[in-house]
Structures are given as C-alpha cells and as structure tokens.
Image (cartoon, rainbow, N blue to C red):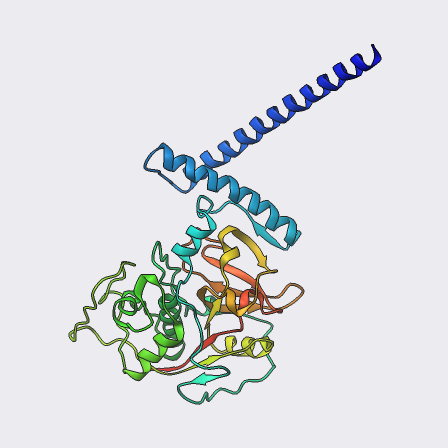
Length: 339
C-alpha cells in the first residue's frame, strides 16, 4: 500500500513537472514570438512566404540565446541585443556582411609606398574625434555587397583630403568595386592593401560620388575622361602594430586610419565598449575606419562602420583599447599623401 502511494505521488509530481515545463515552454515561445513581431515591425522586415518566415524565426530564437551568452560572458562590458541582423544565421551574416577575401599585408612587418614624414612618438592626446573637425563623411550602408574593403579606403581618402584641403568631398566607392580588379572582386570581397597599391602604382584618380554613383552591385568599369577632377593617393603605409597600440593612437591623432578586424561579434552589438573579441590574425574578416579614440578609465577606439546608421552608435562602434581587441593592430593602413 505504501509503495503504491509512493508511485502515485511520483506520477503526480512528474505530471506536474511536465505540465509546468510545457507551460514555461509555451510562455517562452510566446515571448520570443512577441519579440520577433516587434523586430519585424522595427526593421520593416518582410518574408516571401510562411516557410521563410518560420526559418527567420528559428534564426531569431538562436540569436536571442547567443545574445544572452555574450552578455553573460562579457558581464556588462558590452551592450548586446537585437539588431537588424538577428534573423540571420552566423553563416549568412558572415557571407553577406564580412569580407570573404582574407585581408593581409603583402609581406610581414611594415610595407610602405613612401617613407612617412610623420614623427611618431608615444605622446598622444587624451582623446580625439575627427568627426568634430568636419573631416568625416556620412555613414555608408554596404547593404548585401561585401564592399567594406573599398569603403574603408575611400573614407580614409576623404578624411585625409579634407584635412589637407579643408574641403570634405564624397568620393566613389563604386569605382573601386568596378575597376580595381586583381585580388579585388567587387561585392565578393577584396583587400585594402591591394586597392591602395592599385591606386598608387597606376596613378588612379578617385572620382567624386556624383561622377560615378555607388549602387553596391557588381557592374562593368565605366570610367569617363570627362569626369571632374578627383583625388589621387600618392603614398601610404601598411603597418603591423600588434602590441604597439601606442603607435596606433599616435597615427590616429594625426588622421583617421583604416584597419582590418574581426567583426563577427558585431552582429549583436548595440552599444558600450566592445571587448573580449577574438584578436587572432586568422579571425580578420572586415575593414573599417578609425576616426578617433578616448583614453581614461575605459579607453576605446571610435570606428566608423559601413552597415548604415541603424548599427551600433548611429553607425559607429567603440572597441576597447588594449589587448589588440578584434585583431585591430594586425593591419593598419595610413594614407600619408593625396593630391
């Protein structure tokens, strides 16, 4: 009799546990569905059919778990949350927004087209933001085109040209995508270094955006000799500054620079200072322009990204200074002269 009662009690407890688990699962599903509906509305998403909708919802639920894990690992150092990329798998995000052609310098150490005339020391300003000086153009949106390599070069040229002339111009990214060739493959991906090499060695004029509009799609090169005069890169440096972030800060204090990075964790970045990011050379998959930094208790670089103003801090991201976060020192590109 006692054994029978124990079995009955066990069955009741098991049933209650299963019911509670079922209720919790349904409740969590409803919460996720509610978040997904808000996500669709916020980012004006639309899907072809129910199958696609369900697929995106599954990716979204996985993203919610990833966001939770990233937040727990970081313990509040970075703000992670739902972004416009939250309905993409890691593979899709990598294929669409990260650079499929590995960014590397042509040789180890320092590569330069001309000797830098700059005096580089460890003395730096406590902070600098080149946006405040009117030499940084608006945030671009590469959309579904792997154009970060071309965008970072053009934005670097724009800033250096503005510093030199006092005139901020918007130059064509599409020209770089269409015409540079070689290792550079348009929207499929490319290399900052080899784009700069192509510009200098071939004495290429980078034309204004109005002369060669950017559509972020692969097309034939259509340069026209009647275009208004643009700008030419005369010299640049490609530097390996791993473990020498003091030098990186010194370069940034004189002009923005372009860097190769690991941007995989950026899929869920919504604010704060990004840290605990894979800093290996093998992880490099993106290029961006550093437009400033801020030293102090929680020092960080200010990076201009190319995923539109919905990303991060109105299109920008703050990456922690120190520890070569996201591989920020492996490839630093500095344009030293334009005409």
